[in-house]
Amino acid sequence: QVQVVESGGGLVQAGGSLRLSCAASGSISSINAMGWYRQGPGQQRELIARTTSGSTTNYADSVKGRFTISRDNAKNTVYLQMNSLKPEDTAVYYCRADMFTGFRWNQYWGQGTQVTVSS
Image (cartoon, rainbow, N blue to C red; front, top):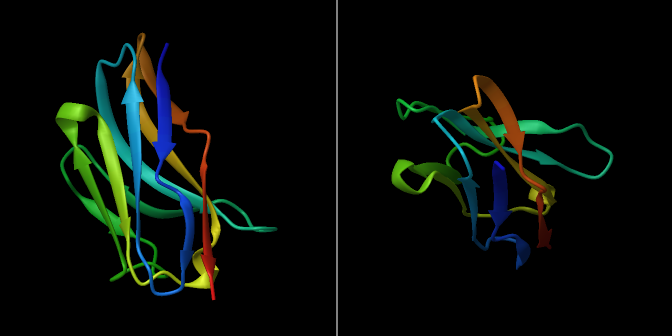
């Protein structure tokens, strides 16, 4: 069974930092892109950071310069270092991994982790 599990969310004051982790496990042949999305109250889920197997990264404008995505291929894990957090960063953060499992590529989502930034 393939799983994607996030951790590291919590409550932090504005200006603070958090580090999210996302680990993929199970019968995985290959992992291509891994990314972080978030969904605030009453909002649509949006992509905020993504990294490919070739280490290409891209970020949403709203988090550029504050968030950093990194990846440990040996551990099938992706991280999101979030600095200078703002109240508008409050959301449920989801990890997505595009993985070759079975005989095809599939998208796997984690269950989400809550990040709350207080002003």
